[in-house]
Image 1 (cartoon, chains in turn yellow, green):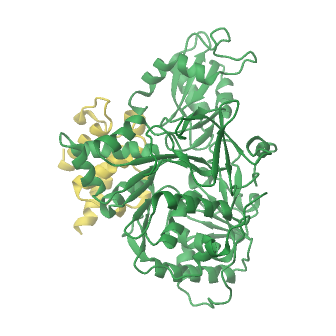
Image 2 (tube, chains in turn orange, yellow):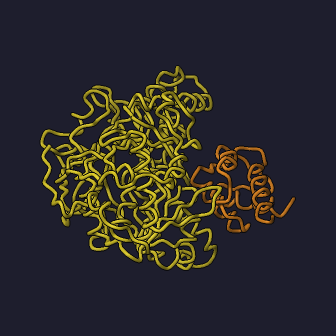
Image 3 (cartoon, chains in turn brown, cyan):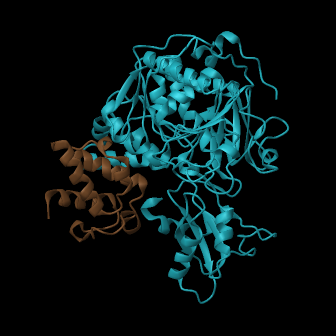
Length: 88
Length: 513
Protein backbone atom coordinates (compact mmCIF):
# COMPACT_ATOMS: atom_id res chain seq x y z
CA UNK A 1 0.00 0.00 0.00
CA UNK A 2 1.46 3.39 -1.00
CA UNK A 3 1.92 6.24 1.43
CA UNK A 4 -0.70 8.21 -0.50
CA UNK A 5 -3.25 5.41 -0.22
CA UNK A 6 -2.56 5.04 3.51
CA UNK A 7 -3.10 8.77 4.04
CA UNK A 8 -6.34 8.79 2.07
CA UNK A 9 -7.68 5.75 3.91
CA UNK A 10 -6.83 7.35 7.26
CA UNK A 11 -8.64 10.59 6.41
CA UNK A 12 -11.72 8.85 5.03
CA UNK A 13 -12.05 6.99 8.31
CA UNK A 14 -11.57 10.22 10.28
CA UNK A 15 -14.13 12.09 8.19
CA UNK A 16 -16.71 9.33 8.49
CA UNK A 17 -16.65 9.49 12.32
CA UNK A 18 -18.41 8.70 14.57
CA UNK A 19 -18.90 5.66 12.35
CA UNK A 20 -16.13 3.24 13.25
CA UNK A 21 -14.24 2.35 10.09
CA UNK A 22 -10.92 0.57 9.94
CA UNK A 23 -8.82 2.47 7.37
CA UNK A 24 -7.27 -0.71 6.03
CA UNK A 25 -10.71 -2.27 5.56
CA UNK A 26 -12.07 0.40 3.22
CA UNK A 27 -13.14 -1.04 -0.13
CA UNK A 28 -11.61 1.26 -2.72
CA UNK A 29 -14.56 0.87 -5.06
CA UNK A 30 -17.55 1.66 -2.85
CA UNK A 31 -19.41 4.97 -3.00
CA UNK A 32 -18.17 7.19 -0.16
CA UNK A 33 -21.52 8.90 0.30
CA UNK A 34 -23.67 5.81 0.33
CA UNK A 35 -21.31 3.60 2.29
CA UNK A 36 -19.78 6.02 4.80
CA UNK A 37 -22.24 8.96 4.79
CA UNK A 38 -19.66 11.36 3.37
CA UNK A 39 -22.03 14.06 2.10
CA UNK A 40 -21.03 16.94 -0.17
CA UNK A 41 -20.08 19.07 2.84
CA UNK A 42 -18.05 16.23 4.35
CA UNK A 43 -16.37 15.78 0.98
CA UNK A 44 -15.25 19.43 1.10
CA UNK A 45 -13.79 18.73 4.51
CA UNK A 46 -12.04 15.58 3.30
CA UNK A 47 -10.62 17.18 0.17
CA UNK A 48 -9.41 20.28 1.99
CA UNK A 49 -7.74 18.21 4.69
CA UNK A 50 -6.07 15.94 2.16
CA UNK A 51 -4.86 18.89 0.11
CA UNK A 52 -3.29 20.46 3.17
CA UNK A 53 -1.53 17.26 4.18
CA UNK A 54 -0.41 16.33 0.68
CA UNK A 55 0.72 19.80 -0.36
CA UNK A 56 -1.78 20.12 -3.20
CA UNK A 57 -3.87 23.20 -3.97
CA UNK A 58 -7.54 22.27 -4.15
CA UNK A 59 -8.24 24.89 -6.80
CA UNK A 60 -5.67 23.20 -9.05
CA UNK A 61 -8.10 20.31 -9.57
CA UNK A 62 -10.13 20.29 -12.73
CA UNK A 63 -13.83 20.60 -11.95
CA UNK A 64 -14.70 17.63 -14.18
CA UNK A 65 -12.15 15.43 -12.39
CA UNK A 66 -13.67 16.40 -9.07
CA UNK A 67 -17.16 15.58 -10.23
CA UNK A 68 -15.97 12.06 -10.98
CA UNK A 69 -14.73 11.35 -7.45
CA UNK A 70 -17.06 8.91 -5.75
CA UNK A 71 -14.84 6.28 -4.18
CA UNK A 72 -11.54 5.99 -2.31
CA UNK A 73 -9.98 4.66 -5.53
CA UNK A 74 -11.15 7.78 -7.38
CA UNK A 75 -9.55 9.92 -4.68
CA UNK A 76 -6.24 8.10 -4.94
CA UNK A 77 -6.15 8.51 -8.73
CA UNK A 78 -7.12 12.20 -8.51
CA UNK A 79 -4.37 12.95 -6.00
CA UNK A 80 -1.81 10.98 -7.96
CA UNK A 81 -2.64 13.12 -10.97
CA UNK A 82 -2.60 16.33 -8.95
CA UNK A 83 0.79 15.51 -7.41
CA UNK A 84 2.23 14.78 -10.83
CA UNK A 85 1.07 18.27 -11.81
CA UNK A 86 2.78 19.78 -8.78
CA UNK A 87 6.00 17.89 -9.45
CA UNK A 88 6.20 18.73 -13.16
CA UNK B 1 -47.38 49.85 -4.18
CA UNK B 2 -46.52 52.59 -1.69
CA UNK B 3 -42.82 53.28 -1.54
CA UNK B 4 -41.14 56.16 0.21
CA UNK B 5 -39.21 58.53 -2.04
CA UNK B 6 -35.47 57.92 -1.86
CA UNK B 7 -33.36 61.09 -1.89
CA UNK B 8 -31.60 61.20 -5.21
CA UNK B 9 -28.21 62.05 -3.79
CA UNK B 10 -28.22 58.99 -1.56
CA UNK B 11 -29.58 56.46 -4.07
CA UNK B 12 -26.83 53.89 -3.88
CA UNK B 13 -27.34 52.08 -7.15
CA UNK B 14 -27.52 55.38 -9.02
CA UNK B 15 -24.29 56.51 -7.38
CA UNK B 16 -22.57 53.22 -8.21
CA UNK B 17 -21.67 54.15 -11.78
CA UNK B 18 -21.19 57.87 -11.32
CA UNK B 19 -18.07 57.65 -9.22
CA UNK B 20 -14.64 56.11 -9.70
CA UNK B 21 -14.16 52.74 -8.04
CA UNK B 22 -11.28 52.20 -5.66
CA UNK B 23 -7.88 51.24 -7.05
CA UNK B 24 -6.77 50.18 -3.56
CA UNK B 25 -9.45 47.52 -3.11
CA UNK B 26 -9.95 44.38 -5.08
CA UNK B 27 -12.21 41.56 -6.15
CA UNK B 28 -10.52 38.16 -5.88
CA UNK B 29 -11.87 35.09 -7.62
CA UNK B 30 -11.06 31.49 -6.69
CA UNK B 31 -12.11 28.78 -9.12
CA UNK B 32 -11.12 25.27 -10.07
CA UNK B 33 -8.44 24.75 -12.67
CA UNK B 34 -7.05 28.27 -12.46
CA UNK B 35 -4.87 30.44 -10.29
CA UNK B 36 -6.76 32.81 -7.99
CA UNK B 37 -6.93 36.25 -9.57
CA UNK B 38 -7.26 39.63 -7.89
CA UNK B 39 -8.65 42.58 -9.83
CA UNK B 40 -8.55 46.16 -8.52
CA UNK B 41 -12.06 47.56 -8.39
CA UNK B 42 -10.93 50.41 -10.64
CA UNK B 43 -10.01 47.85 -13.31
CA UNK B 44 -13.27 46.03 -12.72
CA UNK B 45 -15.10 49.26 -13.51
CA UNK B 46 -13.40 49.45 -16.89
CA UNK B 47 -14.35 45.85 -17.61
CA UNK B 48 -17.96 46.50 -16.63
CA UNK B 49 -18.09 49.48 -18.99
CA UNK B 50 -16.75 47.20 -21.75
CA UNK B 51 -19.39 44.55 -21.07
CA UNK B 52 -22.11 47.22 -20.97
CA UNK B 53 -20.99 48.47 -24.38
CA UNK B 54 -21.09 44.90 -25.72
CA UNK B 55 -24.58 44.27 -24.33
CA UNK B 56 -25.71 47.50 -25.97
CA UNK B 57 -24.22 46.35 -29.27
CA UNK B 58 -26.33 43.19 -28.96
CA UNK B 59 -29.39 45.44 -29.05
CA UNK B 60 -30.26 45.10 -25.38
CA UNK B 61 -32.09 48.09 -23.93
CA UNK B 62 -33.35 49.28 -20.57
CA UNK B 63 -35.96 46.98 -18.99
CA UNK B 64 -34.95 44.06 -21.24
CA UNK B 65 -34.64 40.84 -19.28
CA UNK B 66 -31.48 38.74 -19.39
CA UNK B 67 -30.93 35.39 -17.72
CA UNK B 68 -27.79 34.15 -16.01
CA UNK B 69 -27.38 30.44 -15.33
CA UNK B 70 -23.88 30.08 -14.00
CA UNK B 71 -21.62 29.08 -11.18
CA UNK B 72 -19.77 31.84 -9.31
CA UNK B 73 -17.18 33.41 -11.60
CA UNK B 74 -15.85 36.79 -12.70
CA UNK B 75 -18.12 36.90 -15.75
CA UNK B 76 -21.15 36.67 -13.46
CA UNK B 77 -20.07 39.77 -11.57
CA UNK B 78 -19.35 41.65 -14.78
CA UNK B 79 -22.71 40.78 -16.30
CA UNK B 80 -24.64 41.70 -13.19
CA UNK B 81 -22.93 45.07 -12.84
CA UNK B 82 -23.19 45.86 -16.56
CA UNK B 83 -26.90 45.03 -16.43
CA UNK B 84 -27.31 47.42 -13.50
CA UNK B 85 -25.41 50.06 -15.44
CA UNK B 86 -27.81 49.71 -18.39
CA UNK B 87 -31.05 49.14 -16.50
CA UNK B 88 -31.47 45.57 -17.73
CA UNK B 89 -33.39 43.18 -15.50
CA UNK B 90 -31.41 40.11 -14.52
CA UNK B 91 -33.07 36.74 -13.90
CA UNK B 92 -30.51 34.76 -11.92
CA UNK B 93 -30.98 30.99 -11.96
CA UNK B 94 -29.32 28.71 -9.43
CA UNK B 95 -27.63 25.87 -11.38
CA UNK B 96 -28.60 23.43 -8.62
CA UNK B 97 -32.26 24.01 -9.44
CA UNK B 98 -32.34 25.11 -13.08
CA UNK B 99 -29.49 23.30 -14.86
CA UNK B 100 -31.88 20.74 -16.32
CA UNK B 101 -34.50 23.22 -17.52
CA UNK B 102 -34.37 23.68 -21.26
CA UNK B 103 -36.95 26.40 -21.85
CA UNK B 104 -35.78 29.28 -19.69
CA UNK B 105 -35.71 31.77 -22.58
CA UNK B 106 -39.33 31.15 -23.49
CA UNK B 107 -40.62 30.56 -19.99
CA UNK B 108 -39.22 33.74 -18.48
CA UNK B 109 -39.29 36.03 -21.51
CA UNK B 110 -35.52 36.45 -21.77
CA UNK B 111 -33.93 38.56 -24.48
CA UNK B 112 -30.66 36.77 -23.80
CA UNK B 113 -29.54 33.90 -21.62
CA UNK B 114 -25.90 33.66 -20.52
CA UNK B 115 -24.97 30.09 -19.83
CA UNK B 116 -22.05 28.59 -17.94
CA UNK B 117 -21.36 25.53 -20.06
CA UNK B 118 -19.58 23.87 -17.13
CA UNK B 119 -22.87 23.55 -15.29
CA UNK B 120 -25.50 23.38 -18.03
CA UNK B 121 -25.73 22.36 -21.66
CA UNK B 122 -26.92 24.57 -24.52
CA UNK B 123 -30.66 24.45 -24.93
CA UNK B 124 -33.57 25.45 -27.08
CA UNK B 125 -33.88 29.09 -28.11
CA UNK B 126 -30.19 28.94 -29.02
CA UNK B 127 -30.48 32.25 -30.87
CA UNK B 128 -30.86 33.89 -27.52
CA UNK B 129 -28.27 31.85 -25.65
CA UNK B 130 -24.62 32.80 -25.29
CA UNK B 131 -21.85 31.10 -23.34
CA UNK B 132 -20.94 33.22 -20.35
CA UNK B 133 -17.26 32.82 -21.27
CA UNK B 134 -17.89 35.36 -24.05
CA UNK B 135 -18.35 38.08 -21.42
CA UNK B 136 -14.67 38.18 -20.53
CA UNK B 137 -13.59 38.16 -24.18
CA UNK B 138 -15.89 41.06 -24.98
CA UNK B 139 -14.99 43.07 -21.87
CA UNK B 140 -11.62 44.00 -23.29
CA UNK B 141 -12.67 44.89 -26.85
CA UNK B 142 -12.60 48.47 -28.05
CA UNK B 143 -16.07 49.92 -28.41
CA UNK B 144 -17.73 53.30 -28.03
CA UNK B 145 -18.18 53.32 -24.26
CA UNK B 146 -19.48 56.85 -23.81
CA UNK B 147 -22.67 56.50 -25.76
CA UNK B 148 -25.02 56.38 -22.81
CA UNK B 149 -25.14 57.74 -19.29
CA UNK B 150 -25.78 55.20 -16.52
CA UNK B 151 -29.51 54.80 -15.96
CA UNK B 152 -31.22 56.47 -13.03
CA UNK B 153 -33.38 54.20 -10.90
CA UNK B 154 -36.56 55.03 -9.04
CA UNK B 155 -37.23 53.08 -5.83
CA UNK B 156 -40.03 51.07 -7.37
CA UNK B 157 -37.97 49.97 -10.39
CA UNK B 158 -37.16 46.27 -10.68
CA UNK B 159 -33.51 45.44 -11.29
CA UNK B 160 -33.53 41.67 -10.80
CA UNK B 161 -35.75 38.63 -10.42
CA UNK B 162 -35.20 36.32 -7.47
CA UNK B 163 -36.30 32.72 -7.58
CA UNK B 164 -37.24 30.36 -4.80
CA UNK B 165 -35.13 27.21 -4.63
CA UNK B 166 -37.58 25.28 -6.76
CA UNK B 167 -36.41 21.89 -5.55
CA UNK B 168 -39.96 20.70 -6.01
CA UNK B 169 -42.83 22.01 -8.06
CA UNK B 170 -42.73 25.31 -9.89
CA UNK B 171 -40.12 27.88 -8.88
CA UNK B 172 -41.64 31.20 -7.89
CA UNK B 173 -40.06 34.33 -9.36
CA UNK B 174 -40.12 37.67 -7.62
CA UNK B 175 -39.00 41.04 -8.98
CA UNK B 176 -36.88 42.91 -6.42
CA UNK B 177 -37.35 46.66 -6.19
CA UNK B 178 -34.34 48.94 -6.19
CA UNK B 179 -35.71 50.60 -3.07
CA UNK B 180 -35.65 47.28 -1.19
CA UNK B 181 -32.08 46.59 -2.29
CA UNK B 182 -30.91 50.00 -1.19
CA UNK B 183 -32.74 49.76 2.12
CA UNK B 184 -31.05 46.43 2.87
CA UNK B 185 -27.61 47.68 1.87
CA UNK B 186 -27.99 50.81 3.96
CA UNK B 187 -29.34 49.09 7.06
CA UNK B 188 -26.82 46.25 7.12
CA UNK B 189 -23.99 48.72 6.60
CA UNK B 190 -25.25 50.64 9.62
CA UNK B 191 -24.95 47.50 11.75
CA UNK B 192 -21.58 46.21 10.53
CA UNK B 193 -19.69 49.23 9.15
CA UNK B 194 -17.87 47.30 6.44
CA UNK B 195 -15.08 49.39 5.02
CA UNK B 196 -11.38 49.70 4.19
CA UNK B 197 -9.51 46.91 5.95
CA UNK B 198 -12.35 44.45 5.47
CA UNK B 199 -12.29 41.39 3.24
CA UNK B 200 -15.68 39.72 2.77
CA UNK B 201 -15.74 36.10 1.64
CA UNK B 202 -18.70 35.10 -0.54
CA UNK B 203 -19.17 31.51 -1.72
CA UNK B 204 -22.93 30.96 -1.78
CA UNK B 205 -24.41 31.16 -5.28
CA UNK B 206 -24.43 34.61 -6.85
CA UNK B 207 -27.91 33.75 -8.08
CA UNK B 208 -28.91 34.77 -4.56
CA UNK B 209 -29.33 38.53 -4.67
CA UNK B 210 -28.01 38.91 -1.14
CA UNK B 211 -24.66 37.50 -2.18
CA UNK B 212 -24.40 40.14 -4.90
CA UNK B 213 -25.08 42.82 -2.28
CA UNK B 214 -21.56 42.33 -1.05
CA UNK B 215 -20.15 43.19 -4.49
CA UNK B 216 -22.12 46.44 -4.45
CA UNK B 217 -20.98 46.98 -0.87
CA UNK B 218 -17.32 46.57 -1.85
CA UNK B 219 -17.69 49.27 -4.50
CA UNK B 220 -19.71 51.63 -2.30
CA UNK B 221 -17.83 51.22 0.95
CA UNK B 222 -14.35 50.44 -0.32
CA UNK B 223 -13.46 47.01 0.92
CA UNK B 224 -12.05 43.82 -0.59
CA UNK B 225 -14.23 40.91 -1.61
CA UNK B 226 -13.36 37.29 -2.38
CA UNK B 227 -15.76 35.21 -4.47
CA UNK B 228 -15.58 31.45 -4.87
CA UNK B 229 -17.88 28.46 -4.50
CA UNK B 230 -18.48 26.45 -1.37
CA UNK B 231 -16.03 23.70 -2.35
CA UNK B 232 -13.13 26.17 -2.35
CA UNK B 233 -14.28 28.18 0.63
CA UNK B 234 -11.97 26.52 3.16
CA UNK B 235 -8.99 27.04 0.87
CA UNK B 236 -9.93 30.68 0.29
CA UNK B 237 -10.32 31.23 4.04
CA UNK B 238 -6.84 29.90 4.75
CA UNK B 239 -5.22 31.91 1.99
CA UNK B 240 -7.12 35.19 2.32
CA UNK B 241 -7.90 35.37 6.05
CA UNK B 242 -11.12 37.31 5.48
CA UNK B 243 -12.63 39.62 8.09
CA UNK B 244 -16.17 38.42 7.36
CA UNK B 245 -17.42 35.02 6.14
CA UNK B 246 -20.90 34.92 4.63
CA UNK B 247 -22.23 31.39 5.13
CA UNK B 248 -25.06 29.06 6.05
CA UNK B 249 -25.35 26.69 9.04
CA UNK B 250 -24.22 23.57 7.18
CA UNK B 251 -21.02 25.30 6.14
CA UNK B 252 -20.24 26.49 9.65
CA UNK B 253 -20.85 22.95 10.95
CA UNK B 254 -18.20 21.82 8.48
CA UNK B 255 -15.86 24.65 9.41
CA UNK B 256 -16.24 23.68 13.07
CA UNK B 257 -15.34 20.10 12.25
CA UNK B 258 -12.34 21.23 10.23
CA UNK B 259 -11.05 23.38 13.09
CA UNK B 260 -11.57 20.51 15.56
CA UNK B 261 -9.77 18.04 13.30
CA UNK B 262 -6.92 20.49 12.78
CA UNK B 263 -6.66 21.01 16.54
CA UNK B 264 -6.34 17.31 17.30
CA UNK B 265 -5.55 17.17 21.00
CA UNK B 266 -4.53 20.82 20.98
CA UNK B 267 -6.42 24.03 21.60
CA UNK B 268 -9.44 24.65 19.32
CA UNK B 269 -9.00 28.38 19.82
CA UNK B 270 -5.42 28.26 18.57
CA UNK B 271 -6.55 26.06 15.70
CA UNK B 272 -9.30 28.55 14.85
CA UNK B 273 -6.75 31.34 14.60
CA UNK B 274 -4.53 29.11 12.47
CA UNK B 275 -7.39 28.30 10.08
CA UNK B 276 -9.29 31.59 10.09
CA UNK B 277 -6.43 34.01 10.57
CA UNK B 278 -6.30 36.83 13.08
CA UNK B 279 -8.33 39.39 11.13
CA UNK B 280 -11.74 37.78 11.44
CA UNK B 281 -14.41 40.17 12.74
CA UNK B 282 -17.43 37.90 12.55
CA UNK B 283 -19.26 35.04 10.80
CA UNK B 284 -22.60 35.75 9.10
CA UNK B 285 -25.14 32.94 9.07
CA UNK B 286 -28.73 32.70 7.87
CA UNK B 287 -31.13 30.84 5.53
CA UNK B 288 -31.70 28.09 8.10
CA UNK B 289 -31.46 27.62 11.85
CA UNK B 290 -27.93 27.21 13.17
CA UNK B 291 -27.10 24.39 15.56
CA UNK B 292 -26.70 25.63 19.13
CA UNK B 293 -23.48 23.67 19.62
CA UNK B 294 -21.97 25.27 16.50
CA UNK B 295 -22.89 28.77 17.71
CA UNK B 296 -21.39 28.00 21.11
CA UNK B 297 -18.24 26.52 19.58
CA UNK B 298 -17.42 29.65 17.63
CA UNK B 299 -18.48 32.18 20.23
CA UNK B 300 -17.33 30.57 23.44
CA UNK B 301 -14.64 28.07 22.48
CA UNK B 302 -13.03 30.06 19.68
CA UNK B 303 -13.98 33.60 20.67
CA UNK B 304 -15.36 34.32 17.19
CA UNK B 305 -18.72 36.14 16.94
CA UNK B 306 -21.29 34.41 14.75
CA UNK B 307 -24.42 36.38 13.93
CA UNK B 308 -27.66 34.69 12.98
CA UNK B 309 -30.30 36.53 11.03
CA UNK B 310 -33.64 35.99 9.40
CA UNK B 311 -35.25 36.80 6.09
CA UNK B 312 -36.98 35.30 3.10
CA UNK B 313 -36.79 36.07 -0.59
CA UNK B 314 -40.04 37.94 -0.11
CA UNK B 315 -38.78 40.08 2.78
CA UNK B 316 -35.04 40.35 2.17
CA UNK B 317 -32.92 40.68 5.33
CA UNK B 318 -35.40 41.17 8.13
CA UNK B 319 -33.61 40.75 11.45
CA UNK B 320 -29.95 40.33 12.30
CA UNK B 321 -27.80 39.89 15.34
CA UNK B 322 -24.85 42.25 15.21
CA UNK B 323 -22.07 43.59 17.43
CA UNK B 324 -24.40 46.15 19.00
CA UNK B 325 -27.30 43.77 19.79
CA UNK B 326 -26.68 40.06 19.97
CA UNK B 327 -28.49 37.27 21.76
CA UNK B 328 -27.45 33.73 20.92
CA UNK B 329 -30.38 31.53 19.82
CA UNK B 330 -32.33 34.49 18.50
CA UNK B 331 -32.21 35.81 14.94
CA UNK B 332 -31.72 39.36 16.13
CA UNK B 333 -33.77 42.54 16.00
CA UNK B 334 -35.45 44.09 12.94
CA UNK B 335 -33.29 46.19 10.67
CA UNK B 336 -34.04 49.86 10.11
CA UNK B 337 -37.26 50.32 8.18
CA UNK B 338 -38.45 46.77 8.93
CA UNK B 339 -41.34 45.90 11.21
CA UNK B 340 -41.91 42.39 12.56
CA UNK B 341 -45.15 41.25 14.16
CA UNK B 342 -46.52 37.92 15.33
CA UNK B 343 -50.08 37.34 14.17
CA UNK B 344 -52.87 35.53 15.99
CA UNK B 345 -51.69 32.16 14.66
CA UNK B 346 -48.17 32.76 15.91
CA UNK B 347 -46.90 33.44 12.40
CA UNK B 348 -44.18 35.99 11.72
CA UNK B 349 -45.35 38.90 9.57
CA UNK B 350 -42.93 41.38 8.06
CA UNK B 351 -43.46 44.90 6.67
CA UNK B 352 -40.81 47.14 5.11
CA UNK B 353 -40.57 50.80 4.19
CA UNK B 354 -39.48 49.57 0.78
CA UNK B 355 -41.11 46.20 0.07
CA UNK B 356 -39.28 43.69 -2.09
CA UNK B 357 -42.53 43.55 -4.03
CA UNK B 358 -46.25 43.12 -3.52
CA UNK B 359 -46.71 39.99 -5.63
CA UNK B 360 -44.81 37.28 -7.51
CA UNK B 361 -43.93 37.75 -11.14
CA UNK B 362 -43.97 34.02 -11.81
CA UNK B 363 -46.04 31.77 -9.59
CA UNK B 364 -49.07 29.51 -9.64
CA UNK B 365 -52.45 31.25 -9.37
CA UNK B 366 -53.21 32.32 -5.84
CA UNK B 367 -49.63 32.06 -4.57
CA UNK B 368 -49.16 35.83 -4.25
CA UNK B 369 -52.33 36.28 -2.24
CA UNK B 370 -51.16 33.71 0.31
CA UNK B 371 -47.94 35.59 1.01
CA UNK B 372 -48.41 39.28 0.21
CA UNK B 373 -51.17 40.58 2.47
CA UNK B 374 -53.48 43.50 1.71
CA UNK B 375 -52.00 45.50 4.60
CA UNK B 376 -48.56 45.38 2.94
CA UNK B 377 -47.11 42.73 5.21
CA UNK B 378 -45.57 39.42 4.14
CA UNK B 379 -46.96 36.28 5.75
CA UNK B 380 -43.75 34.33 6.20
CA UNK B 381 -45.15 30.92 7.02
CA UNK B 382 -42.73 30.76 9.94
CA UNK B 383 -43.76 30.55 13.57
CA UNK B 384 -41.96 32.71 16.08
CA UNK B 385 -42.01 35.03 19.04
CA UNK B 386 -40.36 38.26 20.12
CA UNK B 387 -38.83 38.52 23.58
CA UNK B 388 -39.02 41.46 25.98
CA UNK B 389 -35.90 43.02 24.49
CA UNK B 390 -37.17 42.84 20.92
CA UNK B 391 -35.16 39.82 19.72
CA UNK B 392 -36.98 37.52 17.29
CA UNK B 393 -36.95 33.73 17.72
CA UNK B 394 -38.02 31.41 14.89
CA UNK B 395 -39.78 28.22 15.98
CA UNK B 396 -40.26 26.47 12.65
CA UNK B 397 -42.45 26.43 9.58
CA UNK B 398 -46.17 26.89 9.82
CA UNK B 399 -46.83 24.89 6.71
CA UNK B 400 -45.25 21.96 4.94
CA UNK B 401 -42.08 23.63 3.71
CA UNK B 402 -38.77 22.31 4.97
CA UNK B 403 -35.58 24.35 5.07
CA UNK B 404 -32.57 22.03 5.16
CA UNK B 405 -29.36 22.98 6.94
CA UNK B 406 -27.85 23.95 3.60
CA UNK B 407 -30.61 26.53 3.14
CA UNK B 408 -32.53 24.66 0.46
CA UNK B 409 -36.27 25.15 0.68
CA UNK B 410 -38.35 22.13 -0.20
CA UNK B 411 -42.09 21.64 -0.26
CA UNK B 412 -42.58 18.18 1.20
CA UNK B 413 -46.14 17.61 0.01
CA UNK B 414 -45.25 16.31 -3.49
CA UNK B 415 -42.73 13.96 -1.88
CA UNK B 416 -45.30 12.68 0.57
CA UNK B 417 -47.79 12.16 -2.22
CA UNK B 418 -45.23 10.12 -4.13
CA UNK B 419 -44.54 7.99 -1.05
CA UNK B 420 -48.21 7.46 -0.35
CA UNK B 421 -48.68 6.12 -3.86
CA UNK B 422 -46.48 3.17 -2.89
CA UNK B 423 -48.48 0.05 -2.00
CA UNK B 424 -45.98 -0.67 0.78
CA UNK B 425 -46.86 2.55 2.66
CA UNK B 426 -49.93 3.52 4.68
CA UNK B 427 -48.87 6.89 6.06
CA UNK B 428 -45.86 9.16 5.71
CA UNK B 429 -44.50 12.49 6.87
CA UNK B 430 -41.39 14.05 5.33
CA UNK B 431 -39.35 16.50 7.37
CA UNK B 432 -35.83 17.82 7.77
CA UNK B 433 -35.79 21.51 8.74
CA UNK B 434 -32.34 22.31 10.08
CA UNK B 435 -31.09 18.84 9.15
CA UNK B 436 -28.58 17.91 6.45
CA UNK B 437 -30.91 15.53 4.57
CA UNK B 438 -34.61 14.81 4.20
CA UNK B 439 -36.17 12.04 6.26
CA UNK B 440 -39.56 10.41 6.34
CA UNK B 441 -41.51 8.72 9.06
CA UNK B 442 -43.32 5.89 7.34
CA UNK B 443 -46.04 3.57 8.54
CA UNK B 444 -45.61 0.47 6.37
CA UNK B 445 -48.46 -1.64 5.09
CA UNK B 446 -48.83 -4.90 7.03
CA UNK B 447 -46.52 -7.69 6.00
CA UNK B 448 -44.04 -5.51 4.14
CA UNK B 449 -40.32 -5.83 4.59
CA UNK B 450 -38.82 -2.68 6.24
CA UNK B 451 -35.76 -2.75 3.96
CA UNK B 452 -37.98 -3.02 0.90
CA UNK B 453 -40.05 -0.07 2.14
CA UNK B 454 -36.92 1.97 2.69
CA UNK B 455 -35.65 1.32 -0.82
CA UNK B 456 -39.06 2.02 -2.35
CA UNK B 457 -39.37 5.37 -0.55
CA UNK B 458 -35.87 6.48 -1.57
CA UNK B 459 -36.58 5.48 -5.15
CA UNK B 460 -40.01 7.15 -5.24
CA UNK B 461 -38.68 10.51 -4.07
CA UNK B 462 -35.94 10.76 -6.66
CA UNK B 463 -36.74 12.96 -9.62
CA UNK B 464 -38.07 15.86 -7.56
CA UNK B 465 -35.07 18.07 -8.20
CA UNK B 466 -31.92 17.77 -6.18
CA UNK B 467 -33.32 16.36 -2.93
CA UNK B 468 -34.70 12.89 -2.24
CA UNK B 469 -35.65 11.32 1.07
CA UNK B 470 -32.49 9.68 2.39
CA UNK B 471 -33.55 8.50 5.85
CA UNK B 472 -36.63 6.31 6.25
CA UNK B 473 -37.91 5.69 9.76
CA UNK B 474 -40.55 2.96 10.01
CA UNK B 475 -43.20 3.47 12.69
CA UNK B 476 -45.44 0.56 13.53
CA UNK B 477 -48.28 2.36 15.26
CA UNK B 478 -49.06 5.00 12.64
CA UNK B 479 -50.53 8.49 13.08
CA UNK B 480 -54.01 8.76 14.55
CA UNK B 481 -56.38 11.51 15.59
CA UNK B 482 -56.80 9.82 18.94
CA UNK B 483 -53.07 10.15 19.64
CA UNK B 484 -53.23 13.82 18.68
CA UNK B 485 -51.16 13.28 15.56
CA UNK B 486 -53.88 14.05 12.98
CA UNK B 487 -56.40 16.87 12.77
CA UNK B 488 -60.08 16.11 12.58
CA UNK B 489 -59.72 16.55 8.81
CA UNK B 490 -57.03 13.88 8.79
CA UNK B 491 -54.19 16.35 8.20
CA UNK B 492 -50.82 15.71 9.76
CA UNK B 493 -50.06 17.59 12.97
CA UNK B 494 -46.43 17.94 12.04
CA UNK B 495 -45.07 19.34 15.24
CA UNK B 496 -46.91 16.79 17.39
CA UNK B 497 -45.68 13.94 15.20
CA UNK B 498 -42.11 15.19 15.39
CA UNK B 499 -42.31 15.37 19.17
CA UNK B 500 -43.98 11.98 19.42
CA UNK B 501 -41.20 10.27 17.45
CA UNK B 502 -38.39 12.45 18.75
CA UNK B 503 -36.27 9.55 19.98
CA UNK B 504 -36.51 7.57 16.74
CA UNK B 505 -35.70 10.69 14.71
CA UNK B 506 -32.64 11.46 16.80
CA UNK B 507 -31.37 7.92 16.42
CA UNK B 508 -31.96 7.93 12.67
CA UNK B 509 -30.02 11.15 12.11
CA UNK B 510 -27.25 10.15 14.48
CA UNK B 511 -24.21 12.36 13.84
CA UNK B 512 -25.94 14.00 10.86
CA UNK B 513 -28.35 15.89 13.10
